[in-house]
Amino acid sequence: MSGQKVFVIANLVINDKETYRVYEKGFFPLLKKHGGELITFDNDVRHFEGDTKIEGRVILFTFSSPEAAEGWYKDPDYQELAESRRESAVLKNLTMVKSLPPRN
Image (cartoon, rainbow, N blue to C red; front, side):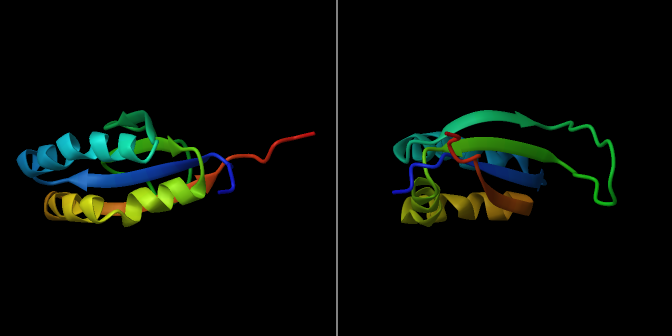
């Protein structure tokens, strides 16, 4: 494992709140299973500049390493749960961003 902390940014538009709640309820145990931590989410982001305005919900969470994030995403239990997200929301993006490397 690299030990380099990573952040995951998700942007989605929820179309079916009831079905999305199924995803939310199952999401947190799977995030915890892989050592992930929710940082924040926002349903009303403020756009300052740029051609592509973000719509819907933005979610930010973190993992201790890229491998942990990939393990979460590839987990068959997560992929099964993600079907409820796919049915209830339009995913605009799901992106992993590495933290800054340690400075000496």
